[in-house]
Picture 1: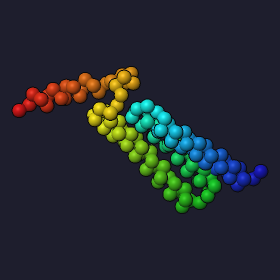
Picture 2: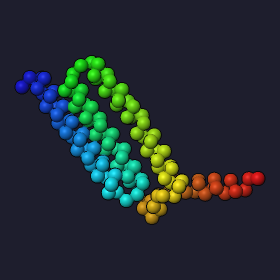
Picture 3: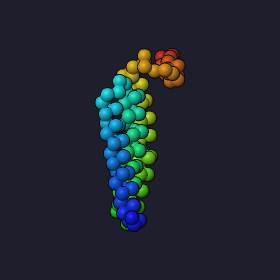
Picture 4: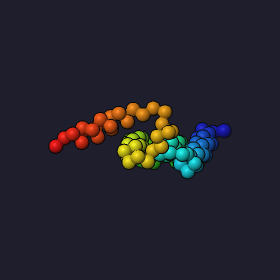
Length: 123
């Protein structure tokens, strides 16, 4: 087996595993009960799945221009997915669509209650 065949095989396996992770994330997005669990399913397996697919593409294509483009996509995904998840989590908590009985630890509850009390006392 030559190194090109080995790269093609590794790329195919990587693309397959990335697609499986993306599928698991999509199923989790539909089946999980609240916004925080769905947010987790939308970011963690989807991001890793995309990274595996891009790694598989880089192993199969093997040109510097393509790899550079794929690295830009990896950087954009790594920067935007956590920020998006954080914003969605905060928005879900502030609007009250989160299920409080599913929260094990509520670190933001006291801060939001104090903030609401401070806003109510100001003229």
